[in-house]
Amino acid sequence: MRTLSLRHYLLLGLFALATWNLCEAGYIHAKAWVAQMMIKSAWAETDSDKSKIKPWPWADTHPVAHIKLDRIDLDLIVLAGATGSSLAFGPGHLEGSPPPGAAGNIVISGHRDTHFRALKNVLLGDSIDLESANHDLKRYEVTDIQVVDKKYTEVAEDFGDDRLTLITCYPFDSPIYGGPLRFVVTAKLVSKDVPNIHI
Image 1 (tube, rainbow, N blue to C red):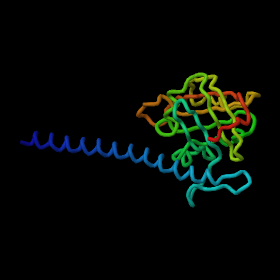
Image 2 (cartoon, rainbow, N blue to C red; image 1 turned 60 degrees about the vertical axis):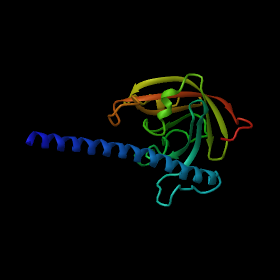
Image 3 (cartoon, helix red, strand yellow; image 1 turned 120 degrees about the horizontal axis):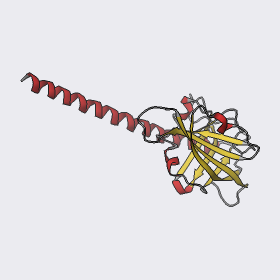
Image 4 (cartoon, rainbow, N blue to C red; image 1 turned 90 degrees about the vertical axis):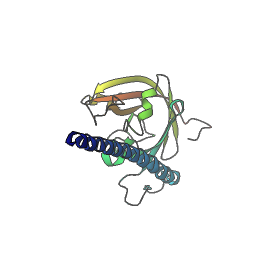
């Protein structure tokens, strides 16, 4: 009888743990989706001549760009700063790299399990459109996809050309938070002031 009761409690405990994990995962994805809706609203009001528009009053970040990769259905607003508090709500522009719209190596990072999850399907030759705060639109083409150690920070350096570097943790389906590897997508500028496109 005691063994049966112990099994019963063990099963209840495992069920409760599984339910908790499912709810937590659902919460993270729901928070990311709702945040992007609020951020898109702030982006609609953003203009390079205006002050920084916060997506909610207590936000410590603001929208700085709009990134779109049509083939993999990625359409996101990029936030200022690649800090943990920013990345919880959207991809973030790495401070120290040129701002979106400028020349050089623009670096944007995001979480592999929410906003940058679609990057696992990116291919060489894919087009990436990046709209800056002053609504200039530039098109980049994916020229390199690599997995590097997180200590390999050279991917964020200036290479003397105009490029976009997207970074997320790797592997995509790992249950381990963070990890030592980074998935890096490099895209080189192919067109400035893309006509007849508003993303």
